[in-house]
Amino acid sequence: MIGRWQVFGMRAVPLAVVGLVLGAKLAFAAPAAPAAPAPPAAMPFLAHQAVYELSLRKARGNASINDARGRIAYSFAGNACEGFTTDFRQISELQGGENKTTTSDLRSTSWEDADGKSYRFKIETRMNDGTPTQVDGIAEHSGSGVTVKLTLPKQKSFTLGPDTVFPTEQVRRIIAAAKEGKSVLELVVYDGSDDGEKVYNTLAVIGQPIPGDRAPAKADAATQSDALKSVTRWPVTVSYYDRAAKPDSGEQTPVYAMSFELYENGVSRSLVLDYNDFVIAGAMNKFEVKDSKDCKP
Image (cartoon, rainbow, N blue to C red; front, side):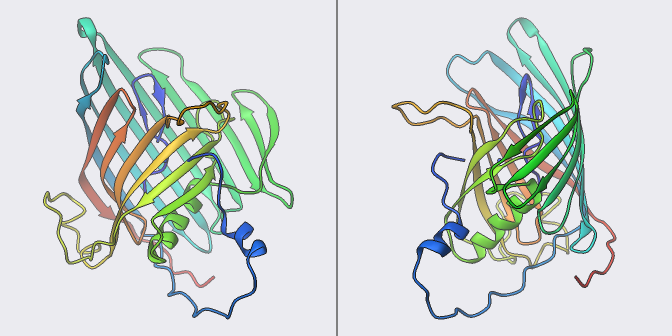
């Protein structure tokens, strides 16, 4: 369940358009309707570790990108009683003109409660041999919005809109929308990235479900795991847009987009990271299911 933590080259990434459509708003606007049958119980998120090998798929336009490589190490654990923890590290090398290489090293840890109401995060980013930059904070939903309190890079507090969601909640809602047969989902997402003050509008485009017994054309560590062989997955593309950008007369361009196949239990495979100037592919070459505690929330 990769979130928006990806960093490649000089760009901070880790998944948005203006004009959000949220179910809560629609519920107040629509007339009462007969009660619908209860949806099937959600499949619990799977505690797991995964490693993705990154490589350059293509460069566009005048981008002076000759090669790119890297690795993502991702660990996800927790349950609906204790909340969910994520440990993430990405090391990337981007080779440009005159054989100039830029290396980035991002490490992050986070915890999010199962209801998506509270989110704690620590992020460290180092470019080449420079001094690392750090972000440390907590975000919590209150009655009127989301209160963010940062201790790094500087002490600061601010409030976000009540429709803001955190990364694990974002994935949960994408899966719920996919199970309901929806093809589009718009969300405002906060994950503490950049300087801790960035908020994104996101647009998720969801494809048709892929049965668990349908193997992809190219095998990887996920397709070889017994824990995933019977689990439905969906092709998903999530575009991230700068919420602070001023609208103009043209179509807004996403900061970046991420495509992947998302399993119903939250595992992601076959990553494609589109940074506009260049595109990175992420192939899962290691997957391990972690032990998790039983939970009866």
